[in-house]
Length: 209
Image: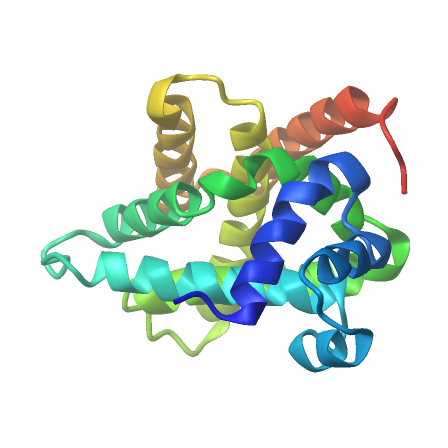
């Protein structure tokens, strides 16, 4: 049985494409489910911020479960990273329509530091699940590079119309190979810049709230 948090988060995701990733949208969703503001504050103390954290946490739980359901010990590191990233996007398919509004929410000036922190935590989850135990400078460089790749993939995935997201999977494969094979950070940043510009131009005319 789904918890109150999960039911409310799911309704919120469905409403976001129409009304935006905002506190007002969450309050309206709570009203539809007859959840008082005081109860809502207990479920999600930071409101729309905590909904995002909840969704990420739920995704990580499911990804870890799926990843550990088969023998992954023989996979090379790059293939472990690719597999985990593919699982994350497969399990986030229900978020795709809400993604533009979520990205605009994350890119607000007041949310940038939180976004960077979440991106790092996401990359750390992927590397840790793959078995990485580095504790030197490579710990930071690996996660920094993967953060750029994940964000680039997120924007790429938004525009992917291919069957079963095969284009996104190919993008993940090439990008992860780039990390392992030493593709320059400058090139990775260039790819991210182009994708980000594409996203901003596509949604610039839409609702900014």
